[in-house]
Length: 113
Image (cartoon, rainbow, N blue to C red; front, side, top):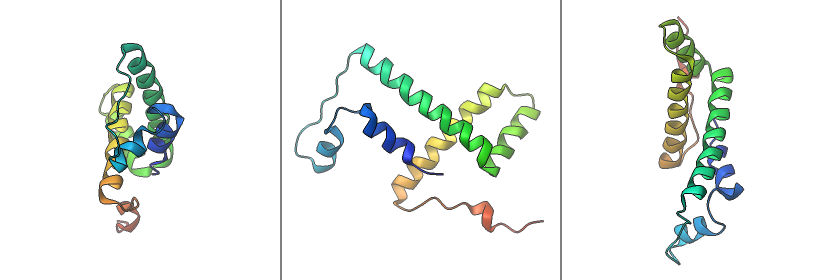
């Protein structure tokens, strides 16, 4: 899974232009507009991007596809399971950023039984 989602959000104006650079270099204390309307609008865009990422992961990632189908067959609501998939997408993205290494799909190396 690619972490391009976060970079798209940064580059699409999710943060004020130059804020991320200031944060990385420490040259200036970054400030964000904290109006409720600004946060609601940015939250909607981020939620839409996460929803698309979760739907794509559900279709293309065998591990997440099996997880989704298993939870739905247990009687869970589809939107509830999709929300859990969103959390998995976020967890994977932050793990990749924290480890500073590409995502490794461990199921590819598992023995077929």
